[in-house]
Length: 113
Length: 112
Image (tube, rainbow over all chains, first blue to last red; front, top):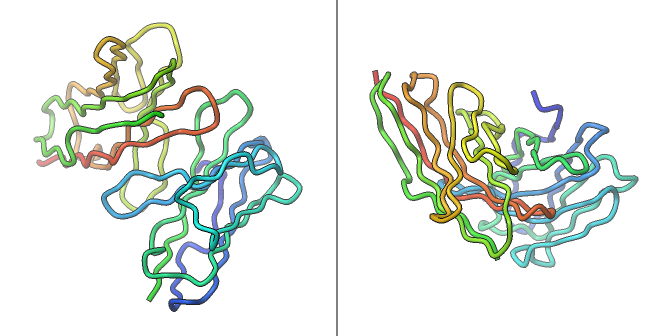
């Protein structure tokens, strides 16, 4: 158990609907990352927070995606107007300052019908 | 820009045989290198990492990897695998900044 929890574990939605995922890292994780993983591929970087500041956002992330980390604790990832291509496992990971090791949550599996 | 290439998408091997999972990276700066493992229905967890120092790195579950700067490789090895090692293995690279880039993964399948 890495201490990073993600909710929900599974989400099934219809195309065009909005979805929101939550990640709760442990308190020592001042860095928080979102990755996306599709079948047969490694995790793809989406975005990164240092405390509450979003410092980098992948070009893969369209304007339908938004992430927040209010107060530098939990984080949410919202996808608006979902498309079938958004179907994937969304992974959250935390790490401490100067610690390159990532602690991953179990992920949220999104299926867009 | 950094990138990671895992040369084998699947590696079948018999129990107690040795195994090597290959990883090559590309980066214009000094790198940190990692291997993560993902067991079925579980999240990714760190197997081992190279930050600096000795190029031979030992990790959990009897795995080790060797950093070869001239060949830009970081291959993972285990002298004798178990059924329980069946999993997906991901090589990853970081430039010491904030972003870790992952390879596409190698599925290790250990047969009895």
